[in-house]
Image (cartoon, rainbow, N blue to C red):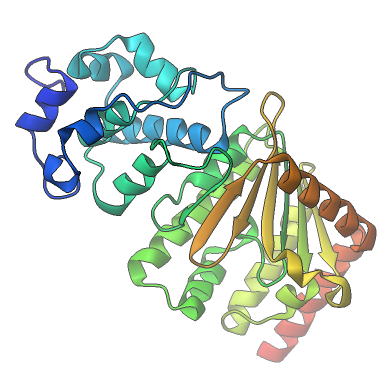
Length: 321
């Protein structure tokens, strides 16, 4: 629903306070600290850093979730519709004050707001940033939706896009996550899986440690359903599923995802149970590109990998009888 009148960003802040940490200037060192013209240099989508790309994507998602069109936001912020469009498509530098105003309009508050504003601050690293996964759970989904090729490896668990909901739920329980965090993690994993199953899905290579596959996460019924799900996914033309033997699973790699796009530089995502690091610097990209080559050399081929999972499925079904 459109707002009753047009207003500038400063008017919006003054007239519509929603609480501490959202629109109240008292949470900053002063009005000037926020209103200063701090902007990421103007850029094109092909040259934008991963932080700039994620900030732009999140702002677009938050607008859509709030139910506003680009034109409505432009009227309420007293700017042109083309400016909002350029921000959302990462075609212009993003000023801190613009981002704060948009997040206020979209009712984004608390830790999520601060995580997004951190991407726009002048002292944010140009390459690579780290944040709590619970604050921006859609980060992976954005990268996967834009990628033409996705490569993943996890030494400890089955990669999130390949998980069944019950497997994710029990995994979150093992990690001690709260019910709210669990629901967010489950929704994120489900959404990421949907991206890989859609029409014109990115080409995906999924490397899974044999040790992670053998590790029971939940009762036998949960593991049986998970193994069956993996077998079914392996037959999709866009997905290559390969098992890395336990003795050569390279645990030093931990969990990572490597995203490649036609017109954007590759992005590497490193994940822990509590935080995610997105990096696109040449040295990091080269390191993980080389690691992927090593995984391809040591992993079982696709057919042998499916047979490995089938054997695990047969074993767990027998135990449950």
